Amino acid sequence: MNAATRALGRAESTLRYDNSAARLFRAYRRIKGLPDEISPEEIEGEKLQEYILTAGNYFANRCIARYFNDELEPSNPDNLHCLLPGTLVGYMGKHLLFIRLEVAPTHPDFQHCVNDDDYPTWYTSFRSEFENACNRFQLLHQGDEIFSGHDIHPLYRKTDNDKAGHFPHAKCDFRGVMLYLWKNATRRNKMMEEAAILCDTADAVGRPSESKFGNFSEWYYDWLLQCTNTPWTESKTLRNYGMSRICDDSFYFDWYANMGAFFMCEDGLARDEDQVRKGQMNSVFPSLQDVSNNAVTKRLTAAIRASLDGVPNDIRKKFSAKSLRKGTITEIAMTSFITIIEVCARSGHSTGTCIESYMDAMNPLRSLPAANALH
Image (cartoon, rainbow, N blue to C red; front, side):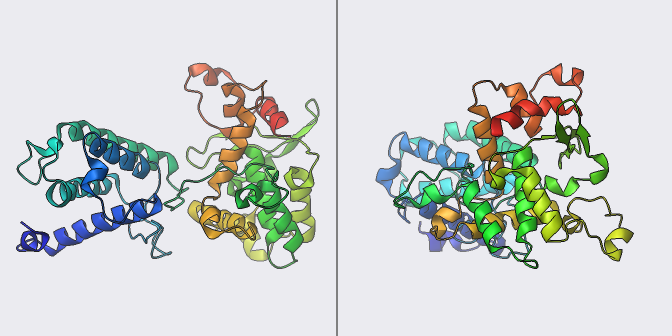
């Protein structure tokens, strides 16, 4: 029975659902460099299960827009809703049904399948694990979504070892982003503010949206540690913990240099009457107060990608605001004297033990070893 025959008598909403599943996997296959059409040879034997498991791992670890384009990004920039885990599970099932009916009906995994809702034995456990994985990812990343079909790469502080310029990826580092912003900043284009937010976020190993919670009333200088403590607030739990700030040899990764430039060159300390009335006198970044966490993430992502001047678009899309945290955590973890305790003390992640309840979260000393690793 062909597709046209099966379509007779089916609800329009069901057909749309099937079409969306087909579009999702066409985009996935194109991004992965696979042929547009799946062939029986591609999924023979155990390869069918491997193909579904690989696709499931891909979809469970990224945000897919409800209305997506061929890059799995939002087709409507104003609609930032994600595909729900249940919908992704449904699309996966539809794709497997398509393979069974149209591509490889004689595949051994389908020998006991009769009805449309019959699946291979291995798919039952996979479906449950897949939905749980999708739920975990969306729970952990809510409010910080980056919609992209491409894997997000870490943005390291300095990777420009390619002096001949043969490898565009080598140009993608934090140093290049910050130099671009500093060189092109004017009094009106807000680039010094973006440089300050990026540096503030990267130095704190924070989520992209968490700089908006900075408040001058909580800052103080610790005379014993000889550093400034700027307590950090997590966007997901609103938990506060100490954040020590130390100097760096390079201005582009020096928190003091970037914050000072913003304060002096772009009126970073000025507040208008509307901001005062809204209680933003002590907000470090008043411009972030009236926008959502997701809007802050999008702004930083746009600033990073715009700064990767001369880098091909397919490489540029692999960097986002989340690249900051990926890069800094990786560099901290590579330092010999750092343990998971020191990494988590600065990044805010849980160690998974009850030892945290016995520590003073507001003490900036806890985040100082990781700061030394970065600087």
